[in-house]
Every structure is written in C-alpha cells, then in structure tokens.
Image 1 (spheres, rainbow, N blue to C red):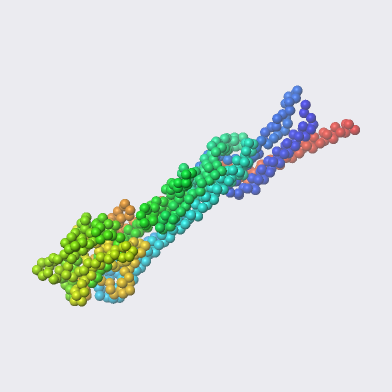
Image 2: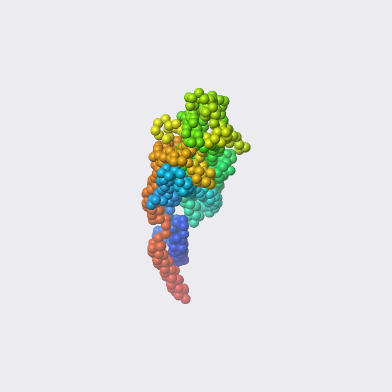
Length: 627
C-alpha cells in the first residue's frame, strides 16, 4: 500500500523533472545564437508503479534522457549543399575579380590600346620619315605591351594567391580533423554503457563536420542511425563506428586522423600538391579527387593537374586557361609582327635564345616554324634589290649543315647564281654570313650578318616570308619564330615588350623594306596584319581568328564564365536557403517556443510544489490527531 511519504516523493519527482526541464530550456535560450547548437528536450516517463491489492499506484515521474532534436538525413543534405555553396561563392567571387581585369568598354583596355597601335602604324605609313611619329609609334607599342604584361601579371598574382590559400585551408582542415578525432574519443567515453547521449559534444562534432564540408567537401559516415520519435517525429541519432572522408580518403577514422600532406618541393613555381598517406607510407595524389568546398573551388580555378615538363604550371584550371589564351594572343602578336618586321633591311639579325640542337628538325621542334620557304633579299645603298634567294623548309630541314645540305646554313652558303647573270660574286652567299652560337647555359642562337666589306659599301638585307596564298599565316614563320630583327621582344604575355634597341632609340623604327626614304611598304603590311586570320594554339585547341578577334575570345569567355558562375550561385543559394530552413526548423532554437516551454515548466514546477504543500498539511493533520 502506498504511504503518504510515497506521495511526497511523487511531488518531489515532479519538482525535479520540472526543474530539469527549466534548466534545459534555459540552456537552449542561452545558446540560441551559438553556432552548431541543437535544441534539447527532456524526455520523461512514468516511474515504476507500486503494486498493491487495489491496483498499481502511480509513483511519480522519472527523467529517461535529455535528447537533442536532430535529423541525420536532413543534416547530410545541409552539409552537402553547404559544400556546394562554399564552392559556388568562392568561384563566383574569384571570377568576378578576374572580370574586372577586362574593362573593354569606354575605350579602355587592351583592345583600345591595340586599335591605337595600328592607327599609329597608319600614321607612320603616311609619314615614313617623320621621327616624331616614330617616337609616338614606339610609345604606343610600349603602352600595348605594358597593358598585356600588366593583365597577365594580375592573373598570375591572383593564381598565386589562390595557391597560398590552399596551404592555409589545408592547415585548417588538418587542425579540425585532429580536433574531430579527439572529440570522437571524448564522446565514446561519455557515452560508454549507452546510458546517456553527449549532446553538446555531438553538436560540436557536427559543427566541425560542417566546417570541413565547406572547406574540402568532406562527408561523414556513421554505422547505425536510430530513430528518436519520443522527442520529435523527425529526430534520429547515429551510433557506432565513425569515419569522415574526402572522395573516398578517410581523414578521420574514429579517434584517429590522417593529415593531408601538402608540398611544393617538386614544383619549380611553388605550386602546392596535395596527397594522402596510406598505412604503408605511400603518398597518393589527392589534387584531382577534391571537387567540393572551398579547396575544390581553388583547385578548379588554379588548376589541379601539373605539367610534366620543367615549366611547372597547371595544365587546366579556369585561371590557367585565361593565361594560356593570353599567351597565345601575345605569342602570335609577337611572332607575326616580328615575321613582318624582319623584311626591313638591316646589316645584322640575331635570334632569341632557342632550345634547339643544330641538327634537329625545325618543323618538329617546339618552335612555331612551318613547312614553306622564305627569301633573303639583298639591297644596295640606293635601295635597289641586288640579290634574292629562297630558303626552303620541309620535314627534315635543320639549322646547320654543309653547303648544299637540307639545312638553313647549307642553303645560304651554297654557291649559286641568284641573279641568273653568270656573276659568281653578287649572290646571297657572297653577302650573308651564317653563325651558330652555343652559350654556357646550353641554349643556342643563330645570327645572320652582312659581311663587313659589303656592309661598308651600304649593302643591307631583309627576310621576306613566302606566302603559299594571300594569307599572312601561310608562310614558314621562320623569322617570327626565331625572333630575327625584332620589333617586339619576349615570347608570351608575361614578357612581351618593345625591342630594347627601338626603346632606346625610336628613330630606328623601319617603315619600309628597302633602306631608302619614302618607303612605307613594311608599315602598310603592319596595317594589314590587324585584318589577317592566324592560328592561336591553346593546348589542343586552335582558334582561327584575327588578333582583335582572339582578344575578344579571351574577354568574352571570361564574361560568359563569370555570368555562368553568378547564375549557378543564385540557383545553389536558393537550394541552400531551403535546406537551411528545413534544418533550422528541426534543430535550431526558437526563442518563442522556448519561452512558451519555460512558462509551461514553471507552471508544472508550481503544481508539483502544491503537491508538497498539500502533503505537508496532511502530515500536520496526522500529527494533530496524535496530540
């Protein structure tokens, strides 16, 4: 039979349950703005009744658990879309920065500089002997080349900044992974025996999971998920073995973690490469497997595949593609300009340093030399053509060789009757000396020189490419590829600049092919260049366009890619907001709801205290009967 003291205990159990509920509600309110916090609820149940003859007598309430309201399935979707949003946000921001480097409106930018550059050639063609115009042309060429180098430098800096961010973010990933492994150990200790759930520790673990998902697209996996419908119909909790992986690589396994290795020691440009260490110590590259989160965005923008040659640059990536396109634009501008400028008469032409052996096939070398031919033209002091010889280039033509061989040198020094006049002393081989030089660095260069005796008499020479049709790009590009008699120095967008000799003395700019006043044939060819179609090679892709058109391709692709990133970000943001709202409706603290619960539990506490005062009055009555 239940006693009066049992009834007193019932009141006490009610007081205790209400007090715990008030404490838990207060804990929820206090952490309403805490990142990663999940609201908690007190789970109560009727205590074991007292068995008596009339029937079971209630024995009050008992607290069975304090559970958090959490849905693993919704949370997995939330971390997944958070990874996508971080990737999209970072990509959008970076591409918007990149697009600001192409202000091709209001007569500002490289295209405007290019237009003014060709306008100056037109002015020069109209006044080929005006030194002031030569100075203005040289200045405009400097402005154009500086703009190209500046743009490429900005993109390179942006790419380098992304590379440094990889190091910072991977360090954060490793730190969080180590902390996560430590929390897993603490959770295992706190939940040993299965009596209680370590709610706040699990919240902390989930928050780190979310951070790792945003950073690197990490995904967590837990062995068993159990429903907890007593608290909420959507609530469930995971138990058992735990792993956190990045595209199949487990960086956290229970209480142990495997750091991501990062190193730039194997790259000449300092680009970082990521790898995962297996249990046997072997490092496996991770660059191409990371596709989510901020690091995934950085790798896709910077490039995640490195070239196997000595250049040490990425072979893919959004920024690298733009840089490759700018290099193709600048390289074609340099080579096509120099190829035309080499037709201007001079006494000496020296090539760029070239990574080419003297017997290597020119067509199959890294140089952009094509099958075809070019003419070496000799001019006398009066500008009259004295001799002309064609030099042919086929699949096996090399740079050096004996007279008459299939080499550039062999064809130049071979004795011939270029003028068909029976005179053996007025042919190209009588004027031109071919020199091959090898420097201490191992690089080579060639030199064409007018022999001193002829130079003293005022003889000069030029190199004219022989076109297979009426297109400028149908020649051999021999002088342009080698950089003979250069108007532009450099090889690509990183180092393009006006030739140093012209920069020091702009009056040296040639307007015509022959060394006489009034000749503007070279300048007219330069004007025509802007309308010519060239092959711009970017990796395995060849664009056929004008110089203007190629720059339009670069600027347009940047604009299109940026616009795609903005639209994609809008879609992902909408999905993220919907998923975040769903997650928040389940797990986040609602101040209004908690205040309502606080009033409810306060009322319950008052009601339980009424039981205590009632029992107290009953006991006083009993004591009064005894007296």
